[in-house]
Image (tube, rainbow, N blue to C red; front, side):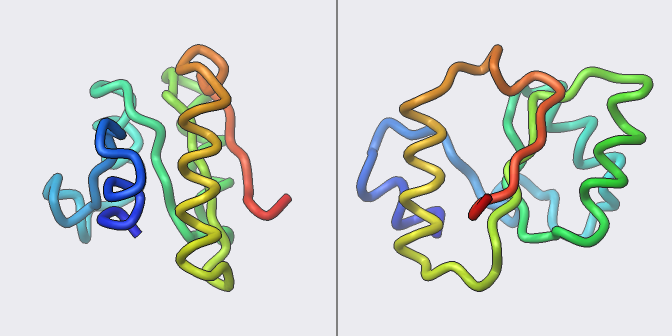
Length: 102
């Protein structure tokens, strides 16, 4: 998904959890790192992320979370990421969580 998104939009600043060393780290720390770095977090976790996110924004500011369904085709997930990147600003994502498809 990351490679496909960057291939379609080379100037897209998008990284995988593996690239950033976040794979296997618990959500509170991942949310803290994403907020510190000013990054919207993209995840497939519809089950626990909304609760973790809600708890996080009670005491800290988040750069936002985008939850993509695991049932999406890769091309649809890439389209969603590019749409968010092109159609919104970083400020619009502060303390926001969105699930796609809606």
